[in-house]
Length: 201
Image 1 (spheres, rainbow, N blue to C red):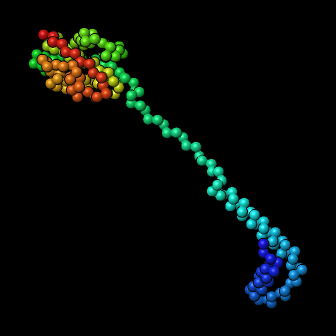
Image 2 (spheres, rainbow, N blue to C red; image 1 turned 90 degrees about the vertical axis):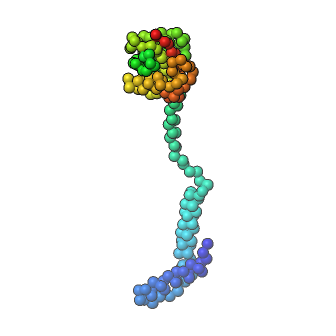
Image 3 (tube, rainbow, N blue to C red; image 1 turned 180 degrees about the vertical axis):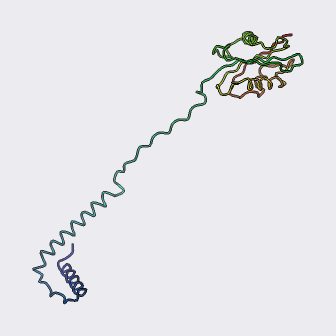
């Protein structure tokens, strides 16, 4: 706390400076007894300002709790494995020279059944229902199952897959192997493939 003597001196200095600025003679010294009430009032004001400053600093201290805005969780990325699957049957007919003669395909003949649930004879029989060349010498029946976007959905795409299979050695007549033919690279790796070959002539 500031002493009474210090307050008196501060008041005298302020009065003298004010008098010089306004061109008047400084007022005579004020008796201490008259200034005591003013000193007390000034001390109270200074103490109050100090308490207010301390309270303000205390409220903003690092130890005070800070509200943290809630952050919305990020939406989870869709799981590719959870994508809906579809099945399709592709009938690839070849002529006597082993060349592609016609292609037919359907998403209906399998009736939603998994291709792994069909026997070789049943898969072949279903392929024969998609006949498109009565003079064909051979048929490749291709059962496909996988994400809908990875399966042929147009005649052009079905034709491209059929052409690839017809010109790939593991799928060629005489050396046909259903396992290596299915992995010939003509389809996306996420597509399950069942292939059967049948000579018609």
